[in-house]
Each structure stands twice: as structure tokens, then as C-alpha cells.
Image 1 (cartoon, rainbow, N blue to C red):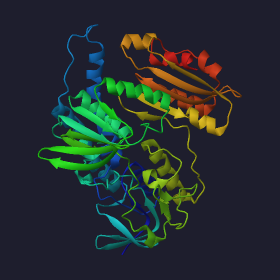
Image 2 (image 1 turned 180 degrees about the vertical axis):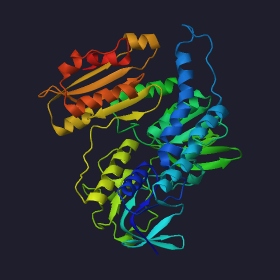
Image 3 (image 1 turned 180 degrees about the horizontal axis):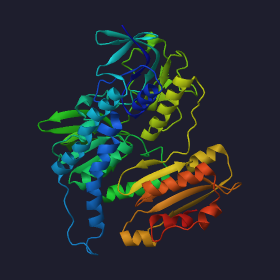
Length: 448
């Protein structure tokens, strides 16, 4: 039996933050992860994906300027970019573990299960702790239809040695769109099949429409209102069967990817034995990120059922709050600032604050500026077809409620809008500010 002040389950950004901060606070800390240390973002998500996107950005820019200054559009060398990506991934787990050991944290690489309210089964060992932190993140949703096991995960996409000539993504979320754009620009024939009427449902739909157009212009076949029913192996290919109303359809591809959502990775922990309240959305927590039924348990990141978006910066923020509450007692409540969210396609789609539908449901008095900016200077100099924005402004306070953009550098520009919403700066002041010119940010006064 081993005893800790704090034992952390999961070594992604939330768990890492908790462990290191608690150890720095003088507590005896242990951490385990059945996968390599680093979590989804660093090893099989945000970071490696962004490295690969870098190569497709070059190709996209050259394609847009072909004939107006560029003669040849470069091809992406898949093996080279994957090797470059791996140079980032390989460094992370040993670097993280070394940091844990320097901080006096005991490290384990084993799956765990609760056997009581304050005891874990870890291999042959039993672990007890004054507090446990569940920071296990999320994992791909299990596909329960026939042949669902043939679908590969996003992790497997990011580790492909060779790019299939054709592929199909099940689901219409950000993972499907981001990876579809990568694959299409690298030469694969891509299909997205989404069972709903509207993909990317959590984003401003007027802006999503522009991404749909850009996606189809790229040659990606986007099939909506179609539910996948079966995957069959046919020699070296896969036959995917879908249904839309009473109409059946089939798609023959070399690879199928499961991008149908990511539920919290908590259901193998035997939570019931520890009297831990949870739902399909995650561990149920109060405003201190403490479990509602077992006060020894805290949760952070994608494994917790909170109002925060499932994003790495939110996981880090929640990790700091959990660590503070464990060290000092429950004094710090979670309060989420306006949080920008991005779909790293090309063009980039992003948003922060309220969508128009959310503003309408809140019954606030608002006005909307929604416009395509494809004829503005910045769009013309970059030769982009999809550049649009939608800003939502509170009529009573003349401050920003929401901002949504598709276009070049939108992932950077949205941060300025996030600051504007957080600080409550008046739209008139945003208009008066001096911006570097000519830059994408210099378009901000014209968007509000």
C-alpha cells in the first residue's frame, strides 16, 4: 500500500499542471498514465496536427498565387513532414517524466481502477491518497455498428507512414474537417459523411457555410444528413454504407476514420466503487472542480463535466484551480473567460463569445454585422475566396458579445476580439485604435 497527498490519473496538460503545482506546494504526489506522458494535445492532437498543417499552408498559399507571381505549386512530401512532426512528439514523454522526477513526483505507467472511495488498484499495488485528480482526457467514441472496428482514429491518422489514395471521415466536427483538408491538399480523395444537417454545430453557422464552400472547392465530398450503418472490408479497400432517409449509399475508400466525437475517458475507472458521480459528459463537479459525491475527488480537462470548452488552455486553467484548491482548501472557483475556438482548416474558421442564436436565446438587445470581405484589399492581395465575419454587439452597452471569422490569420485576430469581450471595451474604442497596416488586424474597425 502506497500513500500520497495527491494522486493524479492522466498526464495530459491538466494532470501535468496539477501534479507539478502540488509538488511545488510541498505535497507528496504520484501520477500515472497508461499512455505515454504528454496527453492528446502534445502527442496525438493539437501540436502534431499543427506541424503537419504547416506544409499544407505553403501549398495552399502557392496555389492561390499561381499565375500571379508563383509558377509552381509544391507537393507535400508526406514522409518528410511526418518525420518532422515526430521529432516534436518523441521529445515530449521523456522530457515530461524527467521534470516529474526532478520535482519529486512518483511516476507510473499503468491503468488504474478504483476499489473504494480512497483506494486505487494500480497493477498489483494499492494506492491511497488524501485527494485523487481525474484528468484522463477524452478518447474516440466507439462505433457500435457492424464493422465499426475498421475505422481508424485521429491518432492513427497522425501516424500514417503513407497517405491513402482515398479516405472517408465519419462525423462533421472539427477533427473531420481539419484532417480532411490536410489529406486533400496532400493528394488524397476525401469524403466526409455527417449524419446531421449542419456540420460544426457549435460554431456560428453563417460562417460555417463559407467553410463548407471552401471544403467542396477543395474537392472534398461533403455528404450531410447521412448516417453510416456499416463498414465492410473488400480486399484492400473498405465499403462504407450509409442511409439518408430511405436512400442507401455506398462509398469505396482505402481508409475510414472515426471522427464521430470524443467522450470523456472515464468509463474504465470503476467510478461507482468510489462513489463518484458522473454522466456521459464527464465527472460531475462543483465550482471548485470537486466531485459532487466524493469530496476526495477532483477532475479537470476533458474528463470533467464543466462549462469550459474542451480545449488545452481550459485544461491548464482548470489544473491550476484544482491544485490551488487542494493546497489551500476550496477557495478558488472556476470562472471561464471568453474562450476563442478554432477549426484549423484552410481557410481557418474561428469564433469567440456568443453566436447569434445564443444571443437570441438570452433575449439581449443586439445588432449583427455579417459580411463577406472577399472584395477587401486583404482578400485580394492573398487571392482568397472565403473571407467573412460576423460580429454581435450589445445595443445597450455598445460592447462586443461575439465575433466569428473565416479567413487568413483568423486564429490570431480572434484573440483581439476575445480581449475586447473580456474587458468590455466599447466598439467605438475598437474603431479608434491604430492598427499596423496593411495587416489582417487593420480590418477589425470595419468588422464592428
